[in-house]
Length: 123
Image 1 (cartoon, helix red, strand yellow):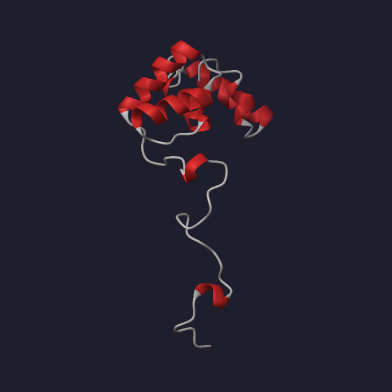
Image 2 (cartoon, helix red, strand yellow):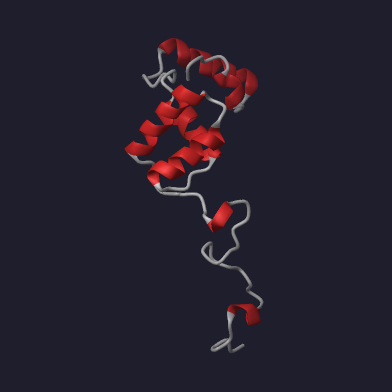
């Protein structure tokens, strides 16, 4: 079958690239930023979490948008805080006691890591 000169839609392939897809759920058609987080954004999240607490993620995202000119969602800000910036996270190497807990709980619970994590405070 000769497809030369036939558009993708005429061939039945109507997939669009991410740049061509309509943007639903974001005002003014701005897609969330997928770039690496900057030090400026991280510092701003730390400051705003101190001021607003850990529940106003949409407001934090709006403040980042105004200050840093990037479009982050509240979910992105929350995930960044919980996984990277929260000072209560213990980032030191696993202790022998923690390794024992992981081993024992994995035998009991299987690979349910969210359940196992409940036995490892601060991790």
